[in-house]
Length: 278
Ligand code: C2E
Ligand code: MG
Ligand code: MG
Ligand code: MG
Image 1 (tube, rainbow, N blue to C red):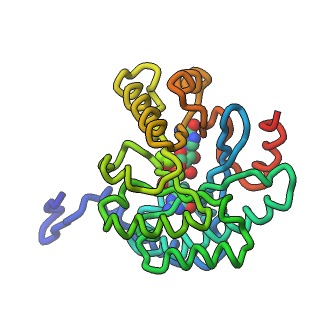
Image 2: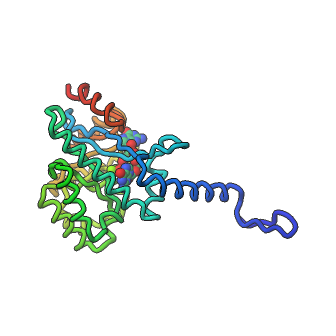
Image 3: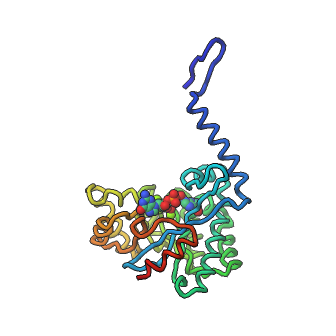
């Protein structure tokens, strides 16, 4: 909002907007410096199927020296705009693969499949296959324990390229889940061509699934679609027993959400496994 603030002074931005811009510039600066320093960590959130822990999702956290823990919603979009998501995404993949290799050596964690979020920009890189395979190799991670979460935003790309990349990695054992399913641009004709393993029902449909007939219909449709296409279906953001019961009634038996556990730092996540195991 441009306004005349006084004689000969033209202020183009409101103070609020200027403050927002300053924050953004400062964040971008900080993010540049944080990449390369050890300011990031992964939290782990359990994925449960038929009452058993089957996997976890790795979720990045930025431990900002002054701001404290910053949630990904506040810096991932910025990292994508600036391209910083590339080194950051590689760090996430490598850290996750190292964790897979470590868990593989322990009886109580060897079965865990670790889901890793991959941004569209990262997946689009011409060397994405090579980079992922070399990361698996150098960390010693079993590819079958790695699940890559992609979003529908990829489907606006060259679909042949997306299919080729997925097929190459899948032939090595890597699995694929379509994250936030139902919120993006999915065309069903593209969907049937993707070599996917899983659809992930977005939290926005789970939230009011008990009270909103449209959300219930969408959840039901996604479960049916998954069954027809031979894909597993997991619901994210399950917070209550009632939501879990409803989803179970639809035939969805895999869940992720606060009901089963919040995303936790490594040590706490590992401690929580004992209680989930029962
Ligand atoms: P997402 O991949 O859909 O991850 C699920 C988000 O839902 C996580 O938020 C998780 O903490 C939250 N969540 C899980 N269960 C519940 C629940 O029961 N209730 C509520 N209210 N929330 C729940 P988070 O960790 O803030 O991550 C947000 C998004 O940031 C992720 O959404 C993902 O798109 C992105 N993200 C996180 N880590 C990475 C990463 O390493 N790389 C990339 N490219 N994106 C990431
Ligand atoms: Mg995800
Ligand atoms: Mg999701
Ligand atoms: Mg989501």
